[in-house]
Image (cartoon, rainbow, N blue to C red; front, top):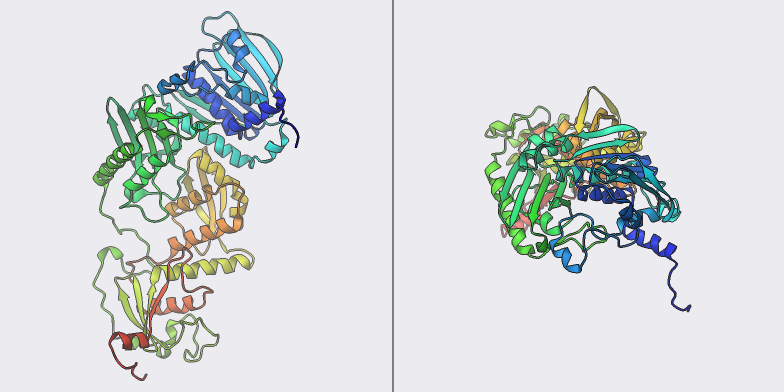
Length: 587
């Protein structure tokens, strides 16, 4: 074994940089925090080639003197703290003193800065952590940091970056978070020469200004449906924008948590949010949330992660209870009775809003072997042309619906129950898969495109999947800064704008390298769920018989794509046993 040695400074600096700088978004986050600490009221951001070519941040803050510029790139150089005790009263964003050092180690970095009232500015240039140039500049107040050729000297790390759309989505998320938490600051963002945002500074930092900035970031539709809760106490302040219980989305991406205006990740905050929706939230639905919490710095620790992503609270349980109770009260006040108006039905079924009493005709009328016209194809049902699944043992007799949700059939003296929604969901799911494997799904071109509004980071993620979505029957185009136009759909599914938004939100949640088969199956399951007949939709006997015949043809007729059972069976032997008979009566 070799003896222990000190690493060369060049190697050590690149390893240390990896703790702070994972990707272009990490660089942008650090630069924005420096601008905020400098008291900037206007921040201009320019990005090229998903941050790998250029990240430039220009602010009108206090600037840096030439002497401080020279030391700012040294490791652990900071103006924020002098002693460990200072962390308990920390009121700034940056404090570790590693950001500029780490960034300069893996890029070509230029700093231009001028303090207010100075006669001239100062510039420094670094390449791979080594200073290559310094000099004087015109006296333009504020600071410009320009980062080029990120990871040029660490090609192994550059190889682990995601695709350009994925990295752009991460960059946009950083700007979204910074802009949401600082409505009093003007943000201007350009990507590859195109202006993405020009967010004007709000007059003051209050709930109304925060709502306006939230509207600018997330869009008019999302903002109009938000519940607003605000509690301000001497020791604690809370402002939250929440989805109404009946308007939940399909993605967690629209959840933002801030503590003292710093974007954070914390399970206590997230669990308090989800616990407050416990009585309202269907499976796979998620609330939109923009939460701002203000606490005394001594009540939390932000120094638990090199990138300051995570936060630890001193009193987790008390904070959890306070947030949960606050949110539950607001949700309870906003809760409205569910309306079935406008819910879809299958084959023009009766309007489910009226919930009429169901009058079933004589079941004998609907014996399968006597009425083959109710089936998709006519055949001798006592001797099927093809062997069916184990549960398919005609003759069947349709008996009726239970709560307009479960279909009841008699089969060889036993009883078969079908969940009408889960059953048709499975049918549509497999029909689409068959079309896909036989040359692609049939496509329906829309006369009027569907417009779907998403956040810019979600939009970028969806556009990363544009070509793949086209193979699935969806033709998409970018429209404006945060909207997508859908020009075609699979002909099998007539999706509403809300359903299309939910589907694209699911696509935007995909992480890392695309796994097309997994995402495709999830997308198909979502489409089938939205198209399928719903619980409480009334089906007539012809439709009910047709449904069980279609289910018989499925490869997996026992569960919907999400895993819920489609069928329950009670055999004639089990019936006899339940009634304590010696055996089933003869057929």
